[in-house]
Every structure is written in C-alpha cells, then in structure tokens.
Length: 353
Length: 282
Image 1 (spheres, each protein chain N blue to C red):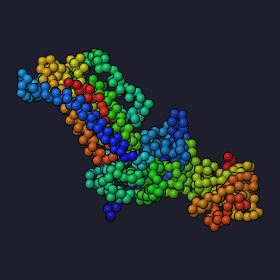
Image 2 (cartoon, chains in turn red, purple):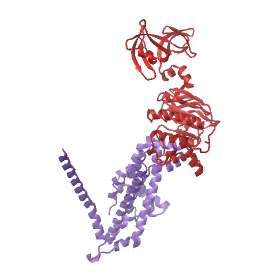
Image 3 (cartoon, helix red, strand yellow):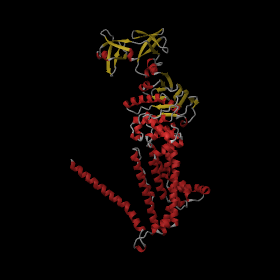
C-alpha cells in the first residue's frame, strides 16, 4: 500500500475571542476565549449544557454568535457561512449520505471543489486507507457498522484538507470497545495529517487520553485549559477538581499558606484559600489506607476494580473518604477493619466552597 | 394442539381467497365491462377498435389528452419546486412554522373543490390577463389541489432521514443550500418524491371540477362531453386514463424495490394508500 505520500496542510492557529451566545434567555456561552495552537488537538470537556457544543457550532459556522469573533489563521470567519469556512466536521449522529458509497461520500467535498475525477478518486482512496477502510470503499452507509461509518465520516472530513477539524462527540453513539479503539485511531490520524482539531466530548477519559490540552467548561465559560496531566494533578478550580476524576472534599483550616488535613500539614496551591476555613481537594490515590488496630477510621466498603481497589472509609469525625489501594494491601481490608488514613501529597487545592 | 391451529390456518386461507376473489371481482368487473363496451361493434355485433382509435385520431380528444399530460407534468414540477425547498427550510430553520405550513398544505383537502373554484375564479381573471388563456394555466390551481397528498408523502420521506445532520455535514463540506437540496436531500427522498409525483399525476388526470368550471378543456371535461355524444369513446378514454395510472403505480413500486436492494433505508411508496383512485373516475 505505497500510495503517493499523503498531502497534508500545515496546521493553523484558531482563536475564539469573547464568544457570547444566548438561546431564549439561557446563556450557552458567556464570554469564551480559547486559542488552539497550530496542529494541536484541544478537547472541550464539560457536563451537558455547559456550552461546549455551542462553541463548536460557532466555529463551524452552523450557528452565529451574539458577540465575539472566530479567527482561523489570520482570517476572521465570524460571519462567513459554514460552506465557505473550510472546516471538516464529524458529527455525533451518523452523517454519511445514505445514497452514496463510502468512496463517494469521501469524494463529495472534493467534487464540490471541482477536483478532477482521477485525483479525486485517488485522494478518497488514500483517506479511506488512512482510516483502514480501503476494502469497504464500495459499501453504503447501511452496510457499515457504526464505528466504520464514523471512520468514513472522519476520512470525508479530512479529504478536503480542512483548516480545522471539528469533532462533535463522534464516539458517543458507539459501544465501549469500539469507542476506545476509534479514539486512538482519531489521534493517530490527527497527528499524521497535523490538522488543528477541536474535539467536544462529555467523556473525560476520551478527553484526557488523546488531547494535547483539555478545556473544562462550565456554564458557558472556560474553567481551565491545560494539558491532561496538569488538569488532573493541579486543577485550578473546585469545579474542575470535582469534574475530572474522583475527588474527596475534606474540610480543613488554612494558615499561612499551609493546610491541616487529616493530621498532616500541606502547602496549598496558588488559587487556594489563603487563610481560614476551606475544603481540601484530595484524590483517592493521595490517601493511603493501612490496617491498624490503633486506627481511628473504619472500612465501609471495598470495591475491586481490576488494576486498583477503591476503599471507602469513615473517619473518627464522621467523614466518608474514598481511597485507593493496590492489590496486596486491599486484600487485608474487609468491612469494619480499623484503619489509619495517611495523606500523601506535596500540595493541595483548598477551595472556599 | 396442532389440529385446531391447522384448521385455523386453513380457515384463514379460505377467508383470504374469498376476500381476494370478491374484491378482485368488484374492481375487475367494471373494467372488463368498460373494455367490452368500448370495443362493441355497431348494432351489438362483432368487435371494433374504433373507440380506441379515436384516442389517437380524434383531434379534440388527443388535444385534451396532451393538455392533461402537460398539466400533469407541469403540476409535478411546480409542486416539487414549491414544496421541497419549503419543507426543508421549515424543518431546518423555522420549526415554529411547521404546524402552520402543514395546516396550509392540508387545507385544500378540507375545502370542496367546488368552493375553491368559486373563490379562485376572480384570481384566474388576472392569471388569464397576464399569462393568456391557455389551459396550462390550470397548473397553479392544480399545484394547490395536490398539496395535501404531496405534502404527506414528502413529509414521511423527510422524516425518514436525519435532515439536520445530513445538511450540516454537506454544508461543512462546502455545499451551498441549492447543492444541499439537489445533491443530498433529493437523492435520499426519491421514493417519497416519486410517490408524491404519482399522486399528483393521478389527481390531475382525473380532475374535472376546476377545468370545467373555469372553462378549460382537459381530458375529463372532454370525456364528459363525449359521454353525451359518443359514449364508447368516452369510456375508452376513461379506461386509458385508469390504465395509465396503473402503469405509473407499477413502475413506482418496481423503482422502489430496485432501490431497496441497494440500501435498507428505502421508503415504501405511499401511492397504494392514496385516495387517488376515487379521483380517477370515468
């Protein structure tokens, strides 16, 4: 399969500036600023109704902002209609044209661009190869599985060598196994073509696993935009902390930049409460649980999850905490075992609410 | 256990056969009688194709047939040009108007043709003034007349596809609205379009009231006229119109089947369930 080298196009920068959008009184976007670096894959993550899909539709031109700008490269496309924006899009719902074969679907955008027949067919074939479906080129959508349809949709979106690739929850309609597979596939293809990509999803695993940076959205605003590791280890707001991964909320006191949590004293992060009462955000893996007759906490529940085990404990002052233990340690824990809970962390986010 | 079931199956079969024979006779006997009557020789003896030959040779009748066929074609074109973009637009952009458009489209069904024609006559004075007195101006009235049937059929067709996603996908690939409709929507509602077109053709070929009261000579008006002077020609023309309708229906269902082999989402032609038959009267 040594087709001619894949023609790709340099990734461009995409800027969303102060986007506002209201739907009959409900603020879907409340001043969204977001810059995608050339060739970067940014995921927008958030609960339903947070405005992430609205943001994507504004970039695609399928909806118009009340105010704000969308800039692609150095071109302001805010008022450019969708069909002249030069964006490839993959939708949540299956969107292949039912009357065309996979090959014809991929050729559709090229046909509109008046690419001549042989070049068109060659490029479509190349895109189908890229997504591993060259052998299914003559099939209609109804003869393809959901995952295959989304692959063809991806090939179709990329065939036109778009300035930006927009992915609107492309995996939500698929079952778990296909989802994980296609997720990695999307990342591989994206890296190969180098197109700047905006990926909207409500699934944090999806967002964290394939993105260069993840933006967490809440109520029409961007809460935090950071690489996946940073988002997880150093959430900047309580919302991000609670939304991404599992989080214990432990009341504590902060004095002079240090918080007293579970008997330990830990530095607080920059955006934390500086003094007084607060709530410390502690990941389950930052809590070590050890069986100990002298321990003041008690095991409530042990859930085996394969690679790790979650242990739910109740402390002496009545708080329930979720901790994580490895196999060997977890084997010694049963319900009602007295345990000691130790905090293992360099610094913590302590929020006011 | 098996015995009663077998007996029931047998009884059901008998019921089906009886129903088929009785209804078949009900529909066929008039048609056969029409054939018989229209080919009967003078003085009740022998067979003659004179009345059928008149369909091709009688200038008045052939003119009327051509007029009606032209009207049918123009009505289909007008209906498609009016309804498809409107319905697509309503579904995509102005959903709040959906009920209203549906109501408007179904309205001609609830008002008797006679009433419409009385209301429309003054308007037609202007149509005649601007476009001349050709019978083809009836197209406008006929487009209104076929709206309810065509609407129902197209509505079902559009409901069967994910119009929003398909049009957004096409637009993101660079398609303008015309391209979206012509190259994405229309190819995916072909069955619905065909059945809408067929209903329209059947309706137009059977239409009498409008043409007669607005003083235009279409097929049915001429058939009625012949009914008074030459009953045989009148009957042969009626039968020919009916057969033309049957052939269209047959073609339609064949087309529908051909498409289904290709993809599973094909829509059943709706024509079988329309009341078009009652319009195609002799």
